[in-house]
Amino acid sequence: MPCQVIVGAFWGDEGKGKIISYLALKDNLDFCVRTGSVNAAHTVWHENKKFALHMVPAAFLNPKTRLLISAGANVHVGQFFKEVEQTQVTQTRIGIDQNASIIEEKHSDQDKASSINKGIGTTGWGVGPAVEERARRTAKLAKDIPELKPYICDQITEVNDGLDQGKKVLLEGTQGFMLSLFLSGGYPYVTSRDTSASAIASEAGVGPTRVDDVIIVYKSFITRVGGGPLPGEITKDEALKRGWFEVAAGTGRERRSALFDFELAKKNAKINGATQAAMTKLDVIFPSCKGARRFEDLPNDAKEFIKEAEKRTGVPITLIGTGPEALDIIDRRA
Ligand code: IMP
Ligand code: MG
Image (cartoon, rainbow, N blue to C red; front, side):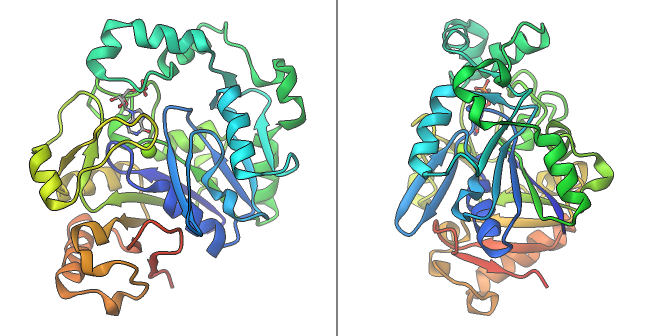
């Protein structure tokens, strides 16, 4: 329990932000470390306010949680300050690892101008070019940016010392396993990093033996934005009819939709070493579930879907999302 990794099961947008914000409030997390970069938006709804976070960790709702941006992350300075203001997190609460790298406007220009990126349908934030520059060792680091000085910290030491003291740490994955540069098999229709649970721990400088739990986040149906194959894809008309049609929180792009894929869910749980799973948006496929907070209150078809997913993936579904609000959750953990 002290160290948990949250990993997306499919092509991102599974609802990781919601699960993380719930855990921050419910489990009183001590640390939440965000990995990845600004291309991923995590949506958090609480008390009728909506936040789409590209930089600030989704655990910000709990004022006791120390919020960190990992050493492996790419920081967009303008977006960071915008979100610090939106979320009103104080300077003492949020830190950026000294060695996180910086994503600049030129990276976004390069991303948008590149023809290969057009085929992939990148988010246009420039994360690919920023990662390239880091690999060439010409990238700027967070510690080189004067405005970031008050936020600079040693995230790796803070988190590992915290684990020594039994503190609760959540490592916040971004995007989904199917966008992994190395492991998903979807190359080149992938993002510019490894998005697996192991890579999330690695980006935060946490060794594999220190991770206690991996929570894989499934959504009750599957979505994808950008190019590349999507098994079980349905038409936009069909998605609209079913009430599944979504528009991306970050870019405003239309998401493609597909049916839940039990085989893929099982395979990805195994590769990511999932110990538990969350299933979000159950209320979208079974509207009468909306707002339910007890498993007993679910209609039979929804219960059967959860049981089938557990049987076919072999992973217990301990958290079930029944609405957009952070606390709209059925929590089946012991
Ligand atoms: P990039 O990460 O912007 O280079 O985009 C590469 C591919 O990953 C594109 O298909 C994007 O739509 C997709 N992608 C990147 N980040 C996210 C995300 O947070 N959610 C969903 N798709 C994403
Ligand atoms: Mg998203």
